[in-house]
Image 1 (tube, rainbow, N blue to C red):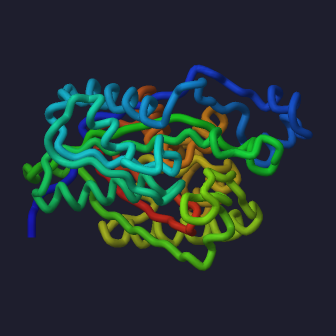
Image 2: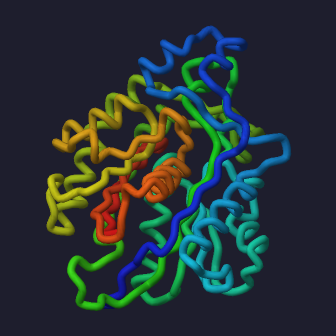
Length: 325
């Protein structure tokens, strides 16, 4: 067994310039700022401009993560992109990122696990790095969900936004320091019996169309807190920690009530919860790296901190990942 560990070297993010507030939405659908904030905690979201793509957002986030890591694009030999809104059906959007960064070695591919995508992508990269197959990975979550929303459906269109976030992760041998840095444990789960609770009603082999996002909100909410809490406790147990050891809880930014509920169930103080859903809305696979970027930029997350990531998305898919920063 390899004793390599996947250590985070840099973080970056990108948000489109266009801000759409709750008040802006009241001009086109029957809703209100009070209704949206009370149910979700969301106050505004970012929306891609005409001609702006999932890949273009991902590339900008990747460049910023590389700069933060003080590395060049040529230092990367693996790109894993989590997205449900690729530029094209194929090829994978990750190869566009690879080409635009000027990388000609290694491998690049997409991972599709909807809102859990970044946890799945980072776990995938972690396994490749620990095996010694690759040395440095660029793990990106990027979404243009505004392109698959039904803007007349107030139950879904108020919830989502666009953006991208990225981590640079490097395989390193433990140096004997305590606590040792890197990914400590991961847990991934899925249960396809619930695939019709959060889905897109189109696709190449079914309708030949892109389709729109559809969601059974109460059912998603009902399952979320329990599934999230269970997978978190399993992940902590694998690494020999308890919730009280966590310095920062960085969950998928879906809904303030879900985030608060998960934190309460784990006995975590509100101060240890990183929440950006009010400004970014639900950016699906991009939400965790964007939240990490925010908490690193403002100085909350520091080297040596124990950081817990978790997410749940369509499928259902869900998972958790524990990192010593």
